[in-house]
Image (cartoon, rainbow, N blue to C red; front, side):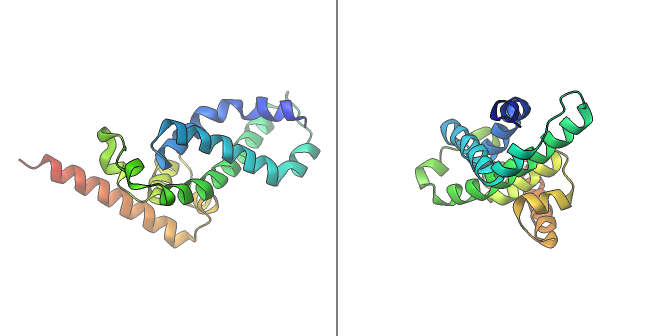
Length: 160
């Protein structure tokens, strides 16, 4: 596969990647940079496989499967890079979270990503486990605790 074919294959994924990046780093510039870094890290590690792969653009099903495989690979790199960056961010950056989603952005970055992967992207636990490089019980714990914290915070705000 040529580099141009690769980019035309993953181009439709950029807005989804940005959405996940923003959930890790709630700053436009940081999220954009995280997308760029994730795609580049994926290309660096998977370059040999990508170059050797033949792409049959006529076979829509194989194109969709390949796109999903690459999406998961890029998300895996995004999780690795984004979680480290979110922990390294200074307090001023952490305080610039969007106010309308303060509860969501107060969660641990891995919990935020796990919730978005499960409920927005509809990934199953095994896929989330692969993306987060975490054991099954840890993924289930993050999903459970994240839901609990979000619901309890919403419920506490609704009491008269």
